[in-house]
Image 1 (cartoon, rainbow, N blue to C red):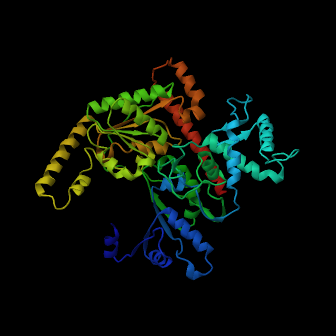
Image 2 (spheres, one colour):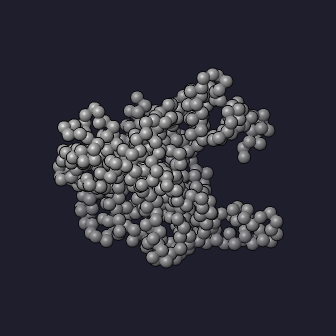
Image 3 (cartoon, rainbow, N blue to C red):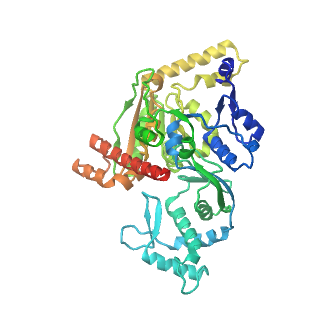
Length: 502
């Protein structure tokens, strides 16, 4: 929609889309301003580097990139490799045979305890114990994948070990409706930061094939990499780089260190009057969900719309089931209902509306208090009479005032994400453009972040403060301990990205 303005000023504008012919792409890249997705720019760069002649290339020199939602691309997706691949050796049957062995192995519950393998959830790795190594070799002998006297760690059997490790990770660390969904016999990755599905993307190192074997769907052949680049390395090729986002401040150090970019905070146009309430921490998830239901019920009674943010499809469906039992009308927005996204968001700001959403509703989503007037007028059509348009405007104004009187949009977070920015994105759906609003996170010691990174510290604080079952705790100490856990994870992830670059 900016195109006509640029063209009026004598500046040419092009758009790069997937599936365009090379000559169309070349013409688009020849324009003064080129719009496109980060994926398309990156893949065009790789294809240009595989071209046999200058005439086959489509991109010009990489001068200036302006990136929208810059933290999502340069930090969350920094390590994501763009890969052009070709077919490799067929090994689908091996995944099925190894997958059949995994249910016979037992997970070690505590260090040095009984079990065949241990799981390190912090680094997402699985390790065989000594007992497990012996048991696996016996199972592989029975399955004719090893011969008598041979070891799993022999150089000749590295392929078997590769398949075994991938299958163990698939069963222990990757869960259906959390990290991926299965649709039409295909395993599709769910982006942990946006909550959206990523068709066409596949995990590497045999992990995707191992998950396909676990789910009993057709196993696609492994590929070999022909060309690859990460977003981190691709965008650093530009002479000048800039971007904008609502949540860059917590990552200012990384922008400076990796990209030599300074973060400047632009003040809001109108004062921010949203109330961000302290975290409520419970001992168990069951208690936490009960408190969330009570909060939703209270908001609905006073006509306040509620957005409930979850970290996975699984939790969004669990909460939907609890609301169904309570006969509370609601909408669910997750990767399985992505085709209804626009329709659900239009209604999310109406009085008493309850919307459960994964991270899909966390970035760039504008929930209008009272409902989306423009969408309603558009649905009415141009042929409708002026009085019909006036009736809709009047009804919307009444709903808008009712929602503002009730306190604006109330955001409920059901779990803290590893990144504070994702939590801030969720909170930022409320209190936009000077509107009133509120937010609160409900947590439990059984949540992944607290269980893996902060359980001892938070549990100790709860004991000091006299915490009992069916009680919640709201205290600055607890909030600080949780934020420290998030900082630790962010620092760990930053180190990984930095090491990858070096």
